[in-house]
Image 1 (cartoon, rainbow, N blue to C red):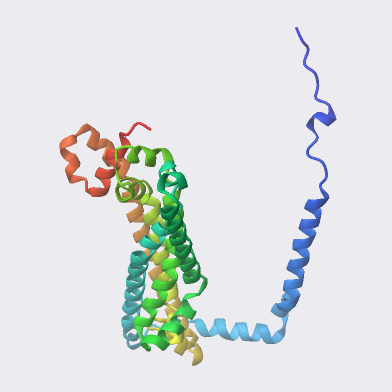
Image 2: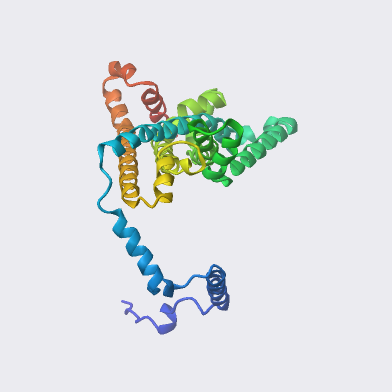
Length: 318
């Protein structure tokens, strides 16, 4: 019988000291301190009497919030306009993001190699991929407010400029998310669908989209929530929405109206979040519906296209 040996100090000793890690940490700290100095960051400013006076005046002016019927009627139409801008902007972004995401998706598998498709088709594919990536990078690199300024010049003041601004920026964001989401689908499932003779369009409709639908919906709903917040400030540059009244109230130092507008914005974002949670929960229940369809084949036609697609490939042996 072998006796247990107590571990020696060198057996449990961690990795050795690494000077490179120390240099990296010190370098990052130096960059942070230099950036803070260049941006004039000073915690002592919070204790300056003028700062305290300004903050007290602002906070005191917030209460009580403005709840007069006339003001609520004024912002009621702007609230509806803000919601409409966010919905239409997100819808247009979805229409633009799907083709951009597909064109900017890196195909995998033997069917997409240089030897399989030939040099011409392979080169065209990579040119299209690169162009789609550049478009998505450009679209999301420019903030919504800058896009709004561009479209205000192009189409004039009003909500249409806000819709185009949200659509342009969100198309770049969603396109990148969609492309990477489609790329992350289990390649074994994709190859199983291709082995049936399905085209890339059929693979997309019946494999990639159904398998990623809950996350796809989650990303889209989150982008709608972001667009709701962005739409509230586009009015600062004349692109419509509740931001128009917010800018006026700030300029006139009517802080009680500002508090009311902030509460309305909070309510809007909360409602969008609730809608997104409910929609995503229903999508996450789709596998359970498909399991029921396995037991009741006659009920499958009533499940809808997406659920039937999930049921089709959930039975594939991969």
